[in-house]
Image (cartoon, rainbow, N blue to C red; front, side, top):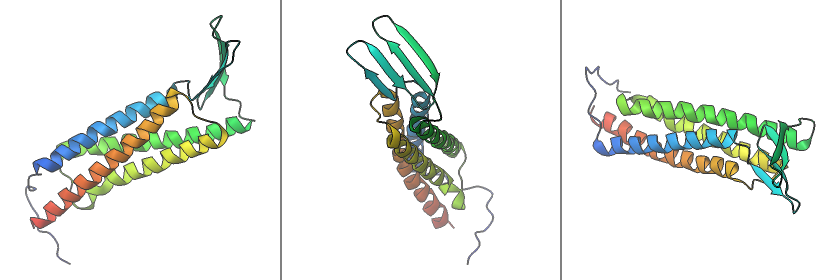
Length: 185
């Protein structure tokens, strides 16, 4: 096995790989923003009957109200029900996914300024892959106990899609950077 010689400077990253890393940065920033907004807003499920009574909730809060008189009462999600325990597990999985997505985004942003070498170039795709797994697990766990019919769930689903795009783009760019580095040796 050949050991690469010590270098005082790395070969310059090609412009196409740099563009791919910048595109992946935008996708990951958008995914993180959408997932944070999606988890904190109240409208994962929304129901309104003919009397104007409403029921809506997210993974943490259950709200009831009336559209006609403008009232709304929100409480913490009751944990002793199937809905409460299912949304609690989904929320935990989604919080882990958001943390992983944030770490992956930071690594991608770091790749814009510092050229990683060796196996380190594959850290961002691996972290984003784990984030997508946790996101799909959160969505599956939540859909086990409820339906998602409002915009907050749509934001998280869009975030999941953008994370997949970001993961694919940064994996391709990382492979290009890795091959280019070892071709120069």
